[in-house]
Length: 148
Figure 1 (tube, rainbow, N blue to C red):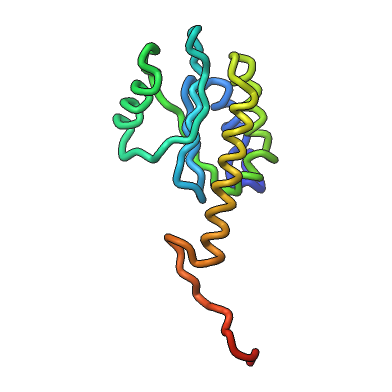
Figure 2: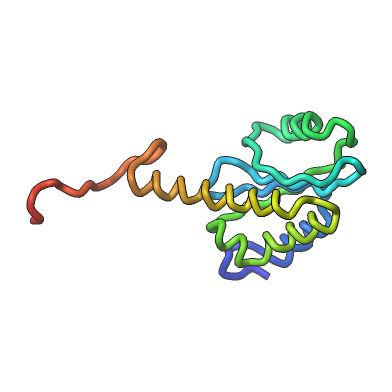
């Protein structure tokens, strides 16, 4: 079902159910959301923001460095998120990821911390876009003189 979010939510929810490792590529943020659902005590599932990489091979190497005791997954599933972080939450995707992670032993406080980092990052990008911060250029400026 493709809807107001511009993605097939049903398919994304199915991906979350079956993925061993998942990458979410946000439209407005550089970092990617890495969710590794694999758990083999004492190794618990992880969720964290990671840098972009240039290839699938580089992502697998990075994952191996993060989780050296676990074998590499067969594949890393990925999907783009073209909307705001708030829409990611409102769509139910965040809740689905969090529920699965918590059921596997992940720390709910850490999951919430990552969610806040995403919101803060998006807010910083929005402010930079409005103020002409790094990576942005204003197309008009308020004049200091009287209004015309």
